[in-house]
Amino acid sequence: MNIAFSTLLLFFLLLPGIFYRRFYYSEEFSKQYFRETFFGIFISTFIPSLLFQAIWLLFAKSVQYEVDLKMVFHLISATADAATFQNIEQNLIPILGYNLSMLISASILGRLSKNIVRMQKWDRKYKHFRFQNAWHYILKGEFFDFPRANITLEKDTVEDIEFVFVDALVELDDIAIIYDGILVDYELNKTGGLEHISLKNVQRRFIHINSLQPPIDKDETLYPIQGHIMVLKYSELKNVNFSYYTLERDEDVLTPRLVQ
Amino acid sequence: MKKIWQRTISFRNSDSPLTSKRVRIILSHPKDAEKLASAVRALRRDDTDNSTFTLSTAAKKAIEKEKQRISA
Image (cartoon, rainbow over the protein chains, first blue to last red):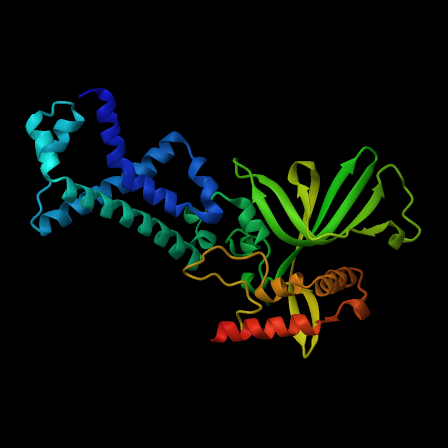
């Protein structure tokens, strides 16, 4: 019995919290799982673990199944004797079932908690619930629902936004290029920043930075770019402008309109 | 039929999509996607004559099919 085993056991006891956290920060918010401070991760893992362990302990007691805490303490403090291991060997299946059910429940509860927060829009209404994925809220237009947002939608809702039109400025020496198109995808990097954006039906427009004269014919500077999607690396963009549109339908005719 | 044009999130899928189902279908049809982008650009130039568009028969059918799938 050594310290490494005790550490491993402590880690095992923290697993319910780790699983809960992993499934809470999933899908579009999965990057946040790795981005918190050690203290933050410890607290947000330790507390759920403690709760799960306590609930399972009480539940086991209620179904007449005794968890020998002394034995667990002996294992952690590296003072376990042969009888302890013999006991574990004899009760291996119930011990495995006990822990497996706890881990599965922690995962399901983590996912459920996230879905409840998202469905109830608590992450938009309350800063405490907000996920650290600022780009998600910008690109999906969900920031309109933030209490501190200076723009409020009076006629439409965030759900009415049907697509986002993007203008992205790229600078090359004394030439600036504006790409515009419909946003179809984006990717975040490890730090939660924007890695790239993907646009569809892109058009390119050249602007001479040093030229004071406006183009004579603005259409001459427009170049449609053929292709399925155009990927723009965020690190090469100077500015990005987002416009949120909905479509109005009048019989067979559709008209894009900025959300209001 | 709200769901075809609203970016709704469900309990099973809490990640809202970037586009509505209707726009996703439009973008899947190249000619319609081009019409949509052109309409937006026309709207930005205050060119009201060109800021509207009609869908191709294929896109219309696809939207109808999606509507039926949702309501089923």
